[in-house]
Image (cartoon, rainbow, N blue to C red; front, side, top):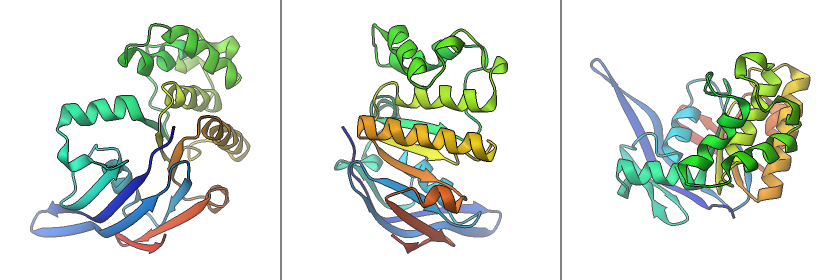
Length: 223
């Protein structure tokens, strides 16, 4: 399954001392089910802020975000947490793996949070799928950067999310390893039919998306 994402008039402001800074200014955006969208723009253009609003990790000052018609602003914190747990996946530049858990335990965690009884079996299958069958008992500190990102990808897809939000997933990897991770991300997305919205500064990464959306000074340049 995949999700449709719609933003209408999305605005986010921050108060810095006496100044009000508008980070996002009236964003209108639609992402279709199963689409791969690259979100690009200079630093400070609002990309990560937009991703946080799409994830329900932040609240808009004006406008709406809807996932399959469900408006995030109408949900309380518990409902948002449940939405993220069941329907959303995340991939980060710095992996954000739990250092005291093995690769298997990191991947199994989102499955355990939704009550899956076969979480370890599914985690092992996913780790094998990303080429880490011989690393399942390793802690993140014993894995390379590329291996850690593969664990993070397995974790992100473990519960078959309808929407995957990725923030510079290749940013901390060397060129070759980053392209390998990106190819794997694309394969998993196609296999599961997941909608993907990815923040990137790399034009070569953006070129692989179905569509590129550019932000500048908090406004949509292209969509």
